[in-house]
Structures are given as C-alpha cells and as structure tokens.
Length: 174
Image (cartoon, rainbow, N blue to C red):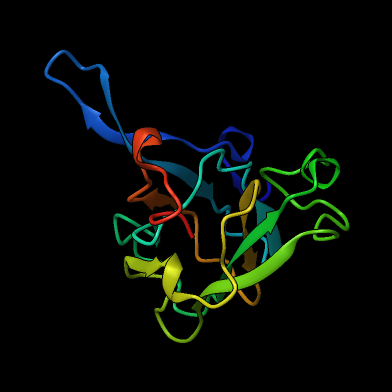
C-alpha cells in the first residue's frame, strides 16, 4: 500500500456523518479530500484533483479537520498550485506521486506543518493572506510528506468559505 488521496484526489462534498436512518449526510458548503496514510512510506507527494471553483477573500484550506493524532515526527507541506493553461491542467494529477507534474503550475506553500506534533491540530489558513495565491482557471493542492509517516491514519482536509456562483464578482474573487 502507499499514501494516497482517496477517490483519486477528487474533491467531494463535506461528509457530516450519518442521519438517523444510517445514510450519509453531506454538506455542499465546501469541499473535502481524505488523505490515507499507510504508516510505511516516510516521504511522498500527493496531488488533489482540480478544485473546480474560484476562491475568494474568505476561502480557507483546513488541514486535519478532526484533529486526528499523528506521529510527532511527521512533516507535511501543503502547496496551492494554479495555472491558466488547459494543456498543463489536463496532465495526470490526483491521488499519488506524478513525475514532473509541477511543470507549468504556479506553486505557493500555504501550510508548513513541521515540528513536534504540528500535524495533530486542525490548521486553517485563509488563502487571501498568502502572497501570490490568486484565482487561476485551474487550481489544486499538493501535499508533500517530507520526513516520517504520520501513522496509519486518515486525515480530512477541507476547502471552506467558497463563494456561491451567484456571488462571484471582481470584489470577492482573488
């Protein structure tokens, strides 16, 4: 097994448990991916699929929404990537390591989860507060595991406070 982003890296609705009938409940007030760490690989690079929506001045990327306990030695960097070139965006991405898939993408580190127990906490970063993160036609996130596996854990990452389609104007979009 290897570290991977479930569902091929595709962003899906936010899972909110189950209803009284036992059926899953979902929220469309944001998007989420789940990273499945296998407790064996010490280093890996994983890419989400395209987020397929614009970001605004309120949009946040959230690491570890449930504050799952991870190994204290794990170091992870979360990177926003964007491009306006459809030929770059059409290249393979999503889920696992992809050779040379940073080519043509603008890359900006948005979260640096290094040091003792840095991956354990829920960490939210407002994207408008990070220099050089702007709306691009195609955007995704890259998760780089640098030193040690966080353990046999699933980490949920969310993109929240996305603008509603009817509210997207030059004043709210980055």
